[in-house]
Amino acid sequence: MSEIAEVEATRAAIPEITDQVDYGAIDLMNTIASLHSEITTLRVENSEYQARLLDFKVANESLQKQVMILKKRIEDSVKPPLFLASVLEVRDDGEALIRQHGNNQEYLVEYDEHPLEVGMRVAINNDLNIIRILSGTLDKRALIMEVIDSPDATYEMVGGLEKQIQSVRETVELPLTSPEIFKDVGVEPPSGVLLYGPPGTGKTLLAKAVAHHADATFIKMSGSELVHKYIGEGARLVRDVFQLARDKSPAILFVDEIDAVGGRRTHDGTVGSAEVNRTMTQILTELDGFGERGNVRVMAATNRIDLLDPALLRPGRFDRVIEIPCPNEGGRKQILAIHTKNMSLADDVDLPALAKLTDGAAGADLKILTTEAGMNAIREKRRAVSMADFRNALDKLAKKSGDEPQGMFV
Image (cartoon, one colour):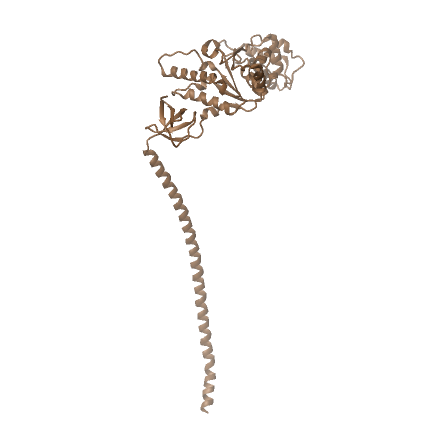
C-alpha cells in the first residue's frame, strides 16, 4: 500500500511541477526578448555613432584644407613680391635679355630650367632670378578689343566712295585673297592704308566691308585705348594686339583715332609725353616688321591728318593715304537709298530732293536723318514714312547749336 500511496502522491505533485516549469519558460522567453530589444537599440545607436563619425571625418578634412590654405597665405605674405618682365632676347649661352614692367629697365639674366621664348612674360624676384613663366602672354585688354570673325558689312552698304573702295580693295583685300599675284609680279603688297576725313564718313564701315569680302577677322582698337599712365603699358598693349592679329590671321587690324597716340612727337619733360612717344615708337616698330606679320593688313583712321607724326606717313608704313570726304549729291542719294532700303516709304518721298537738301552731311548724318524720320512716323502711328517726316527730321537737324558735334539732333 505504501508504494501505491507514493504513486498517488507523485501524481498529485505533477501539476504543481508543470506549473513551475511553465513559469520558468515564460521568464526565460521574457529575458530573451529583453536582450533582443537591447541589442536592437545598441545597433541603432552604433549606426548613429558611425554616421556622426563620418560627419566628423568630413568636417576634419574640410578644416585641414582650410588650415593648408591659411598656411599658404601666411607663406605668401612673408615672401618677397615677384615682379613682371617680358623676354626681349634669348641667347644661346643661357642668358636672356628681359625688360621689367613698371620701370621699363632692361636686364641680362641667366636661365637654365625654364625654356624661354621672345615675347614671354615671366615672374622675377629681387635678385632678378626667373621664378616661373606666366601662362598666357597676351594682355587681357588686347583680348577685349572688338574682334569680329566675319563682319556682315559689304561694299554695297558704303555709298558714294567708289574710287576709295577700289583703292582699298587693291591695297588690303587683294593681298589677302590673291597673294600669288604679287608673288608672280615680283612686288611687295602695300604695307598699310590710312583713311582720313571728317567724322561719320564711313571709314570704319569701309574697313569692316574689306574684312567681310576678304573673309578675314576684323580687330578694332582706338588710339586712346593705347594711352596709359604706367610706363611701358601702352607699348606692351601694342605688341599684344599685333600678336592677337597674327594669331587670328588672316586679319585686318583697324586703329581708329590713331592721332590720339600717333601725333607729332614732342617731349615736355613729363612722364606722360615720354610714355606716348614710347607707344608711338612701338607702333612704328610693328609697322616696320611687316614681313613678319603674315596675313595681317593694317588700316588706320583719323579725323586730323595734320596732327600725325611724319614718321607714320613715310613709305613702308602707310603706303596708301586715302581721303574719305563727305559725299557729294550723288553719293548722298546712294547713302539715302541704302538706309531707306528696308523702310516703308510713302509715294511722295523724293530721295534726289533730299540729297540736294542735305549738302555737307556725312553718311552718319544721313543715317540719323532716316532714323528720325522713321521715329516721327511711329509717333503718329503710321506704317509708312512720308516726305513730311523727312522734312521734320531736317528741321531738327537744322536746330542744333553751332558748337554741337555734327550729326547730332537736339
